[in-house]
Image 1 (cartoon, rainbow, N blue to C red):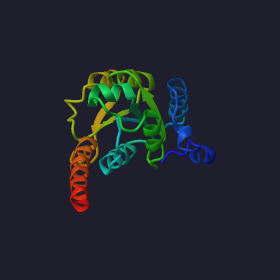
Image 2: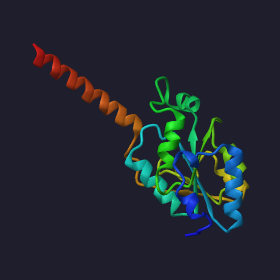
Image 3: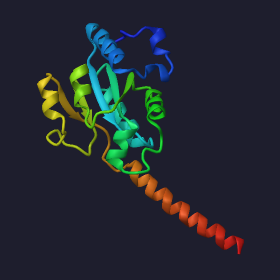
Length: 183
């Protein structure tokens, strides 16, 4: 593993590794200058589950520096619907930044990750197993900047949306049981 990061940088708090685009571009440039291989992963990460962790760990294994792009609250609402996200963007970013495999996090407000790809020009764009290399919407952008798309993570059998549905059912059952006990 590349050790371009100082011991002090490795001990930074999770919140300090959430970077605005200009700072992120500069940090990635420094890492690249030291020979680091840059990997970009992205997602909503609204309710963290083991599938997210496995995706990010597998993405990190592909290179030296893992950058994670987090969809803004507005974009999560666009993708997932009213009532989402459950966790605000800054908190989602801090949670993701706290994962050992993650080096830097940024929040992007655009509908796709294409602008971030063009800005940091990663060597690898890691996507989850709900995609194939040919179905990744940004694949042409990745190829145009000299990168490649790699599919990582475990099979897509974890979902924040499904967790919410299950919690809703359990909550309803619990509520009915409590009502019955009170009668």
